[in-house]
Length: 87
Image (cartoon, rainbow, N blue to C red; front, side, top):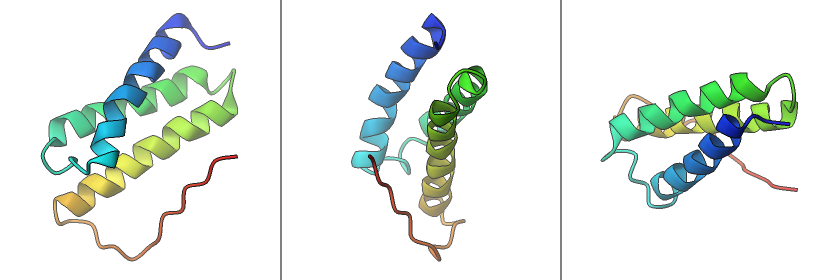
């Protein structure tokens, strides 16, 4: 079971990253995007021993934010397709 910190931080991460991703404000919020990426990586490390699926999701969030931020800054080339699926 995740710690209270991980549960609270995960909820806040969801609340913070949803507008970044849905409204595509990554370009206007590079510091916030970087903070969210770091938070996602910390959460992945926190839960990896107790919930590998959650750790993978947090790692995917960090990777997705990195990709979007690179594209927004003009450093990333869109040569791939990202497919997100939920079961």
